[in-house]
Length: 120
Image 1: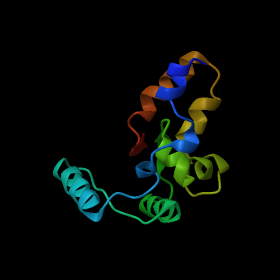
Image 2: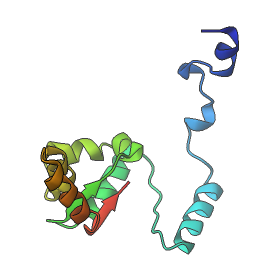
Image 3: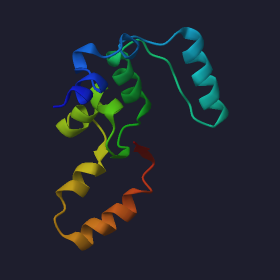
């Protein structure tokens, strides 16, 4: 690695601390207000555990779920929970991934974009 690359890209351990702490209450309140103004319901939680609990409470039993790649869902443990099968929802992402026939998989993709709950 060149010296220029080393100086431009510090090791992860030297990441700015601003990415490791929650933003101010004014910042989060402003963000939530702005999202609500766009028709997006947002709620503030203190940590990953609360986030996972809140998300799981919001999903009705038997709901069909389709998820795309999501760092947030991964970080709060939702992706692992969904993959575990230890829940009361229908994981359409797993069915899509398991389908090996390209024609059937394309049909499932078309069908799943219309599921009631889709997260990305």
